[in-house]
Amino acid sequence: MSNKELLLQNYRKRTGNSFEKAKAVLFDMDGILYDSMPGHCRAWKQMCDENGIEADADEFFAYEGRTGASTINILYLRQFGREATEDDIKRLYGRKSELFKAMGLPALIPGAQECLRLVLDSEALPCLVTGSGQLSILERLEKDFPGAFPSGRRITAKDVVHGKPAPEPFLRGMERTGAQPYQSIAIDNAPLGVESASRSGALTIGVRTGPLPEGALLAAGADIELKSMLECAILLAELL
Image (cartoon, rainbow, N blue to C red):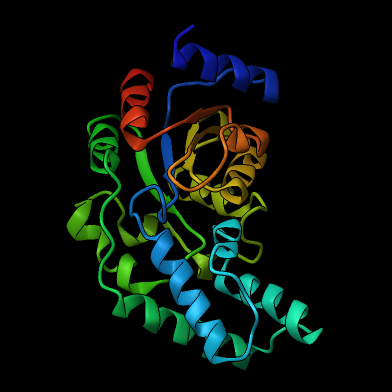
């Protein structure tokens, strides 16, 4: 069975729907478009060290997809037994963003540009769906993916009330593109993001670009799990 056949079969089993022609392809950013998660993890860890918050750098891979506010609240509840205030969140996320930016621009994920070219050459609309508010990367999107993500097709942390793993981010992306769930392909590399996409009803492709065990994205709700964005480009070429 081909990857396309397996994907569509699993989607029908999960949702009871048949996937129609794609109107939207919804892309996560960190770990899908950019190899940015190692830098994010180092920046979070340094910010925590500066503020007396105990944390392990690797734990931030597990929080990938959450908004910055949600991650800071997890840290505060564990360390101080309370949620962070708005001032706490603004200060700490600002510092984390400053540290990340100082590390320099992350590399593109191999295959990401190929995936976007395929979408732009099709009748589907690409849309960014990220839990990040990291301006240093968001401001780079037009240079690296020209025409793919205009401001009206970007869902970031500031656009949602309930971030990943809630389905709201991907549902917002569908609203922006005028697509129904059975006309939407979602691509994410993190368990929380895959869960969000799966719960939205989109055809969900998990791409294991980070330090995850095989099967982790299937367990989170992906209809198929791939090893790279290069593999994803091959699959998108068939789907589109």
